[in-house]
Structure formats: C-alpha cells, structure tokens
Image 1 (cartoon, rainbow, N blue to C red):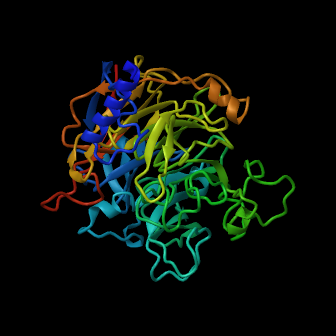
Image 2 (image 1 turned 180 degrees about the horizontal axis):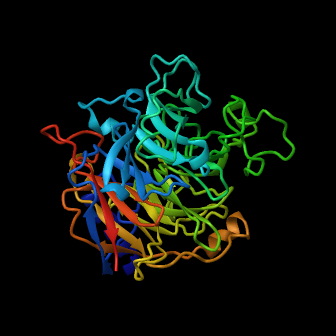
Image 3 (image 1 turned 45 degrees about the vertical axis):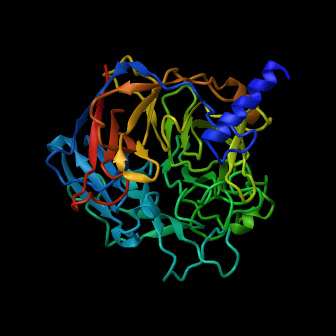
Length: 497
C-alpha cells in the first residue's frame, strides 16, 4: 500500500472518528486558514446613548434630497427610527409596523430572521415622500392571494414577505413628518415563504432608479422540503425564492397592476406584451422580476455608486460557507449546486455537505469575491464600501461582519468586524455574465480591530448621506429583549484612521 493511500485512509478514518456522521468525500474543514487581525483598528462610538433604545436595529439609510444630517434605522421588531444629528442626536419613531408583524417570545429562534427587514427611500423622496418597506407578515387572516408561491394547493405558508409603499405628507421636515399612519399603504408584492428562515428581506434602490429585493431560498436546510422545487429554489430561476429581484415601483405593467417590470431585466422576452411578471411570468422557466439568482439567504446588500462602475455587494449567509458576492445581471451564484467556491451535495434525505473545492467550476456559476467557513462564524452580515472623507486606511474598502452568535445559543453574542483587503473597483463590468467571473479578484478577509463588540451580536450596518458608517447590534441576536425585559439595541458610528 502506498504512503499516499495510507495517509488518505488515515485522514478519512480520523474524520469519521471526530465527526461520526461524516460521509466519504465530505470536506470537514473546507477553509482551514484562519482570518487574521488586520493592521487597522477602528473605534465604535454609540450615537443613541440616552435616547430610546431600539430592540434590534438591523439596517439603516438616509432619505435622498434632505438637507438634515440624519439617519433612518430599521428596528426588526417594527419601528423605523429617525436620528436627527443636527438637533442633538434625537431619535423619534418615524414609522411603526409592529402591528403588521407576528412574534412569539417563547420561540425566538423561529423569529430571528423575520420581522421588519428592509427600507428604501425613493430617489425623489424629497418631492414625492415615497418610501418602501420589506416585512414578514402572517398568512392567517389574510384574504389576498400571494403573487408568488412554491407551495402546493392547500398547504399554508409559514408567513409572507411583503413589499409595501408608503407616502409622507411633508418629507422635507423630519420634525413634522411623523408616522404616516393616516396614509393607506400600497402593497406591491406578496411572496409566500415556506419556512421561518432564509427570508433575505433587504431592499434598496440602485443607481438606475430601480428597486432591488433580496429573497432567500425559503428556509430549512439544503434547499429541500415543502415549498422547495426539485433541485432547489436557489438554482431555479423559474421561481423567485433564492434571488435578487429588480422592479420599477412607480410603473404598473406587472400582472397585479402594482409595480412594473423593467424592460431590460435579464429574463424579460424582447417585445413581450404587458402584463408581465407574477406567477405567469415564470411559466417559461425564468421569472421576469429576477435580476440574479442562486442565493441561499442574501440578507444584506449595498451599492457602491462611487465606483467607476456601480457595484452591487451581496452577503449570502450559508450552511457551511459565508460569502460576499458582487452581483451582475443574469448572474447565477451557485446555491444549491455550490456554496462559496465549493461543490455542495444536498445528499437526498441525509444532511447536505461540501465535497470538493471547485473554483470557477462548473462554467456559468459566479464564485464569491470572499468567503469564510464555520470556524470563523455562522452568519455573515453584509455592509458597505467605506467612503468616509475622514479615513485614508479604509477608504474604498468593503466593511462587513459576522453576527457572532453561537450556533444553538442565540444568547451568546460576540460579533466580529471584517474588511476586504483589496479595493474591488476594477472598472466597468462590460464583458457579461461568465467572463465577469474571471475579472473578480478573490479578496482576502482581515478582522478589524475594535474593542466595543463584547457581548454584542452584529445585526446590520448603515450609511448616512455623508458616507459615514454605523454598526448596528444588540445583546440577544433576536428581535426580543434581554432576560429581564430590556431592549439592548445600539447604533455605533465607525471612526477609522
């Protein structure tokens, strides 16, 4: 017997001894190299000290066109807070969606990925007062049918992802523009979610003025089970789960009459007559609303409009691999055929596993620009390209993090801040889907030194109009208070050298 064969058999035997459920060919430690501490440290300064404490701040942005120095912060439990820095960092409840949501404090794990998940202000918000929200809402008691479902007739969804439009009467006055409760919401989309997790949920306007919507694969593991099509939702552009959608919220040519399908969406047939989209727009195997697909749980995304060609960064939280993707139209990002740059085996009725490292293979799937495995964290939280004028060492670098909770124990938080080592502004992506993959450099990850994340789970990031960045966190990792009933959310400004 050769020494190499002996060594291979020893490695397999050792893996089976340490991991008794291991399958032959399974990669036990796909990325053995650790993430090292980088040479840049930042300080995190809480900006909501002494103000109303949010429950679970998980995203934030600014309203285009407003002159006030401000930040809107999503609270997963329902409120949308507005911080006005010009008048002493006050925060007020701008919009409260709590009544639309459904939570069960006795089952926090099932609601960790549900709630108020996204907000986007229209590019002309200062004049039209329009903003959009993404929420997880119960199905029971709802008379309206979903615009999209992967469930067979008679099977009830766990909940629905709902995209809504609201209008503020006086958008330029933060002090006067309080909750638009007297304005009926207009629902653009209802999407059935088979399980409680993998909802995605982030929304945002691109530099093209279109609204982008991130949707997870529907939940559970391995992209299998009720509500998951054969082969998995992620890799199938014939349903909207596991995709980035792109719609025009001010047009009405979609089948339900509440939004529009941009004519240049990748899967719109040239010259196709309206109405487009909806479930019927998927019958050709490619949904009209889809911009890119092949995601497991694209929970956060951001545009870097300052790059030479605007880039869309998406964080995709996986089972074994956490990844950062740069997304292009018509892009296929692998799930559940791949996870990161690795081959994924759904394994039938058994537990799925990674079987081999397969960069750029098969052709047609775009690998991430950065990835890490469960040795470093279990829930990537996407951030943004840092463009603050006060920093030179982190300028044009993408900042993100890992939530930092322990698997099976959401009460143990130790969030981590990461940065991509390279500036990924490599010029316009004009050479199409697959060839773009060859131009995306694989970026190494470094940890950002800081001392303020002890006992905190990172839930999201935010940027204001001045490109200053914020880390959003709490002590529970869920949209619930701590053991004594207190909210623990904190909004921290990033101060970088």
